[in-house]
Length: 347
Image (cartoon, rainbow, N blue to C red; front, top):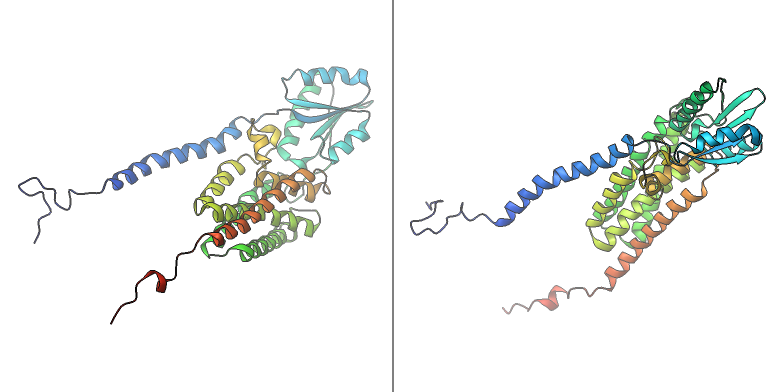
């Protein structure tokens, strides 16, 4: 039986000849896992630890003489609020309903009145209510709060809507990866992506609107938003995979999970996240999808244009990449048939 130890001349035996790539793989695992962990912790904990208003749109309404002191105090808070001035309470209320501002402080003869929209983000509404109440108490007045667009009774804290961000992203990644794994290309891949996204939108709306009753807008509009959110991710996954291979799946998944989800502002608002997280998150599918779903479900479509265009751009570019990848693959010179490449065996 052959020995597994070095012979007397110093020639290494089978156990001594271990390929160097095994050492590289071992080192890669040891170093890569902590790096990924650090990136994940940074992406999810950094925005949460630095939550604060940054140019948060806030309306102020009433006579100029009465609001001058209020505006001066708000402006002194080092860029926390972006002040929008309105002539009266009706104009300020309309601005809240149009999602131009998150809330408005109205000076009335009966005292200050705060208009909020908890449907636009319960965390923002709570922040405004707490900050303005403290300011009113310092002035010796009592603040009255009016919830112009309240959150649904079955989801007063927005937890259900926030929880929908991750499942929609996962559905998109799964659909895009599955299309590549099954070898679907070109028009067939596009059809599979469109069909799966449409069905996910219907199923998710049936759960969120019809069963849980946490979505309160037009049923089919909500289904379209949820389906478009899935298609934006699945199209990007399948498209980049068609162009550069399996690495495309990892790239889109990494961007979606490490940046899209924690930077979406779903649990708070983009203006409460540190920059550039707040702005970047709105250009990625999870953030754009959340903003669009809020607009369609609670605000009759107000403020829906930008997030709708963002999701559409992701979907169109992704599906276009799927078709382009199939076309490029078809143009590559195929290997010659086996009968032409291999010499015939002579009997």
